[in-house]
Length: 380
Ligand code: ZN
Image (cartoon, protein in one colour):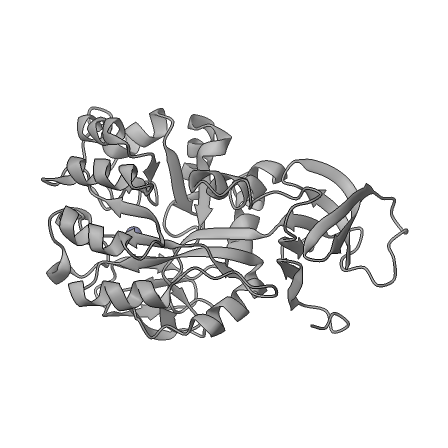
C-alpha cells in the first residue's frame, strides 16, 4: 500500500510517498508533484497524518460506553470514518453495578482495519456536585479506594478524572498513580491550593479545561488557573460551543504545545442524526453539534475529531504540526503510549490518516489495514 501527500509526522516533512508493508511503515520518501503512483492513496493536495487518537469519548453511532451493551464491533469499525485509529472510551458517573460489565465490554482490542480500544477513562463518580455537568447527581459519591481498586482489576483503566478537593481524593490519587493510572482534575471546584495538593499527590492532567470546573477569576485563579500556569497536560474540546476559540488561543499561548490534548468528549449521537440519546442513564437531546439536557445544560460534543482538528488550524490559528500533535503525539505521551502510537516513522505500526485540504478524511489505515476509504476506487 502506498500513500501520497504532504506528511505531518506530526513534524512537517513536505510532500512524501509513504509505503506500508506487512502492517508497518516500510519507507518514507520525499516526492515531487505529479509523481504519485497510480495506485497510491492521496494526492499532492492531501495531508498524511499519524492515525488520530481520541482519549476522551463517551460514545458514538447511537451507543453510550457506560452501557455494557454498547456495540464495540460497530464502533471500532466505523470510528475510522473520522480518521480515528485509536480511542479511549469514557465511563461517566454510573451506578456501582454498571462498572464491571462496562469495563468487560470495553476490553482493549487492536485489529487491522478498525480503530483500536486503547483502554478506559473513568470520569466520576468522585466529582463535585457544583460542577457535575450532565453526570447523574444521584450517583455522585466520595472517593472510595476499595471501589476504585475493583475497577483496576480489569487491567484496562488508563486514566481517571476526579475532583481533588473531595475528602479522601488525595489518598485515591496516590493509590491510582501507584498502580499506573494517570489522574486528571475535572468536574471540580478545587482552588489553586487544592489543585497544587493534587499535583503534589501525582495528578498530571486537567479534564476539558475550563468546562465543569471552578472558573478562573483574577483573585481566585482556581484549578483552571493552576492548570494554565503549571505543566499539567490539559485536554479541551474545540467545537466552538464548549469554549470560545479565543480561549483556545489563550491556552496555546500559556501552555507548552506538548501539553495540549484535543478530545471530542463525543456522545452516543456522534455520527447519528439529531435526536434523543443516552449518557450514563440520562437522556439528552442532540442538535447535531452538541448534546444538552432538557433544561439546557451542556453535555458533550458531537463534532468529529477531524473537524475539531480543522478548527484548531482554521479557527484558532495553530500551525499544522502543532495542531496534529494535539491529536497524535500529545495524547499518546500523556498515557504512556508514545513508543507505539502517535508518530509516522519507518518501522512503526502503520496507523495513518489521509485528509484533504478541508480536513475531510480520505482514508484511514489502522495497523496496516484499510479501515476507511472515501473514494470509490479505494476498496477494502
Ligand atoms: Zn466531563
